[in-house]
Length: 475
Image (tube, rainbow, N blue to C red):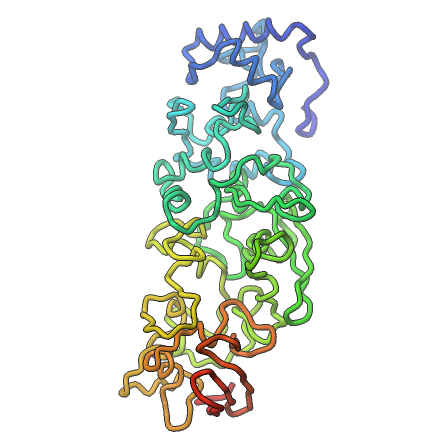
C-alpha cells in the first residue's frame, strides 16, 4: 500500500479468474458463510461489474501462505482494517472522507449499525457493529434489476431506510419518507448518482442537464456525518448530521436579483460559511432547473432585500418588542429551514423528510388570502406570539404589536383575530425585495399600496380606502 493506493503486484492472469472464483466459492460455502447465496457463478457475475473485478489477491491468498492466519484466506482480519488497506484516503469529491472520518461518523462506532436483513441476510457475528459490510459487499450484490452500484447491498433509499425505520436506528425516517402525504421525492428517482466522486455541478442538479433530484446522500454523508453531541449549532450553521455534503456558496446581488453561485464539493468541509441553506439551495434556487412556479428561495432570502426571514443574515429590524415572540425567539434570532420544514412530530426525526402539511411544513399554513379564522396551532405562531398577533380580546392591549390604526390598540390582532384576515393576505413568507416587514401587495383581500413614515405609515387595501397608522414603539 502507498498513500491509500494499491501497489503494483500480482493479479489474476487472463483465464485464471475461474480458478480463483472456484477456490473462493468452495471456501465460502465450506465456512458456513453469513451470506449463503455465494457460489462461484454468483461471485463471477457480480465481480465482473464491480470495482473489485480482477482484484481477488488484494484481499485473499489462494495458497494460504504461512503468514496468512485469517478465516476465508483473507490477508487480514475480517473487519474494517482489511478495507482500510486500500480505502484509506478520502475520495476526490468527499463522498468517502477516509478511514478516520468514518470512525468518527455516526455509522463507524455505533453499536446500532448492524444490518438487520432480511435481504441480504442479517449480520449476526459478534463484531458486526460498525463494519463496512453492513452496507457494502466486496463481491457485489445483485437485485431484480441487476448489479447494485458502488458495491452496496441495497439501492439508494432502500439501503438507508432498512435501518432508519425506528430499528435499529432510533428515529423513524422511513415513515416520513414513505407514508407522509408531503415529502421529498426520494422514492421517485433512481440511478441519479455516480457515486462518491461527484465533483461537477451537473452530477447533482445543475444545467445543462436537469439532474434535479432528492436522495438521502444529497443531504447526508453516511461516511462523515454524525449526531450533534451538544445540540444543533446556532443558525445558520449546519448540523453535523449534514456534514460532508456538497453545497452552494451564494453571491448575493441587488434586491430581488438572482444570486450567483459557486458549487462546493463534499470534500470541502472548511470553507466558510458552512450553512444549512447552502444544501437546500441545490434544489430550491435558480442554480438548478426548478419546476414552473416554484420559488427561487435564494432570491427571496437575499439579505439585500428590503425584508427577509433571517436565514442567511440577521434581520434588519432589531427593535421588535420581545413580547412579540414565543419563548426562545427574539429580534436577534436567526433561523434554519428546518425550523419551519419537517415532520412536526414530537421526538421524531429532525429535517424535511416528510410532513402531513403542504410544503413539508412542521405546522399547517394555508397559502391563501381568503378570509378565514386562523388557529393558534398554525405555523406563524410557532415564533410569533398569538396574544400579540391573533388574540383580539378587548382586555388585552397587545402593545407589542407595533402598528395600530387610529382609536384601536390591538394592531395585528384586530385584523387577524377579529376581521379574519390571515397573515398571508399582507405578508410573504421568505422575503420581499422592495417592501419592509415582509409585506406584499396584489392579493385579495390584501394591500394595493403601502408607504412608511418614521412614526407609522399608510396602506390602501381591498377592504378599505387609504388609512394611516402609528407605531406603538420606535422602529
